[in-house]
Length: 459
Image (tube, rainbow, N blue to C red):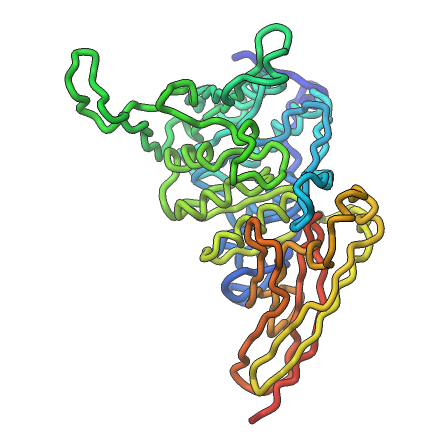
């Protein structure tokens, strides 16, 4: 079998195995639905009964997940960095600002490892993901021509050549504008590589595109089947419309995250290669599409990303769904190493009013840190007439016990909603002294907390 060799793969002629670092500590920061104290507060085992949104560097996160999830994940879909050599920004919109106001660019991630380093990193990452899969579990990696051909050789080694199932070509969509002016053949597709651990997928549900009205076979007779079967070239048939949201100016799915993928694209993969109740994992969840689709399709999910902006975008999309299964927002802390320096201190003020056993919390003011504010274009700052425009939403733990926030109230700005409700109420079951923790999430991806004492007197 052909082999791809990169610097560091061998030492003294011996293959260097993936360095399995000590598992990072998983710290639960928020729980949305349910209590964190169930099944051992803050422990990895607590995550076994709920969905998980994990912030951390991929090797740290995957190593931390192995003790609990090794051999339990049914489907992995990843859309990793492609080693494009570029920087990618989240384009944050300020609610209520003029439509022509510039968006605020917030760094999402940098994709410039260099090819040798990318191959080594990808090989180690693929091996960790393989170990999380069940036997017969499906693995999809979404790439482009920068790395797809190298990745195919790496994955043949990691999974075995017999595990390879298909190369799927996803046509991005129509060609117009600046793309049409490109010299040479115009790039208009991405590549998905599909593998099955052990060589045969335990789950695969064939997809069909419904026949259009009046469809007949070549012999003029009506069709007998359920539709046109989907082949390994997607969005290249008049019946199979799967254009990228990146080329659709008015797509309602867009959240401003670079490289965001369509829900319909990910849904096709989840329907084909998982069943309701299966665990689906995305280690580069970005805007949160895989988690959102898994939630809608009744799959359990684990979604990870190294970018705090990605965690913010995914959390916001999930909580905007309304009724959702319980999930935790977690952080994987490496066993050693320093955290990135904070961007600066934001300021949140709130007050509490108590009437009998009913408590009301009013948000009074919020201010971005000076460093974050300086990144906002002047024309956009001028469109901010009220401090609440900086806030996407907030959560309140009305009986905060320790470090974990259990979100009892969740207030989020709906799409197109100019005014965010700034008042939330809660009825306590009995008298006592409580701590209410308010956590506000701003439009630039930051989070700010405020603890308030709540004294509920007996009647």
